[in-house]
Image 1 (cartoon, rainbow, N blue to C red):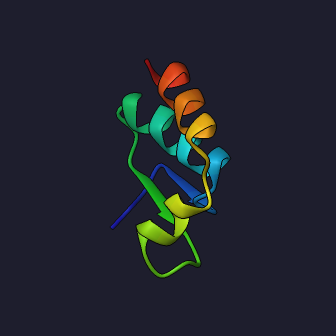
Image 2 (image 1 turned 90 degrees about the vertical axis):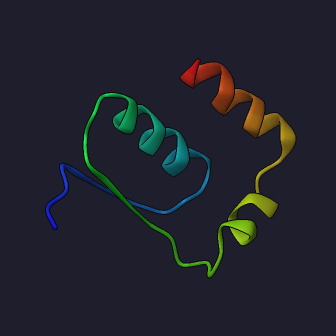
Length: 57
């Protein structure tokens, strides 16, 4: 499978970058070392999630 972009790290910056690129209709691969999405989300605060929502629209 071919990707337009590869993002390494599913932290706040990686999630925002992936969301923006996906909205631009690009094929994005997000690579994260944690085992589950829950592990990633537990490390992101509610404030950070609000920032993501505001930036994406």
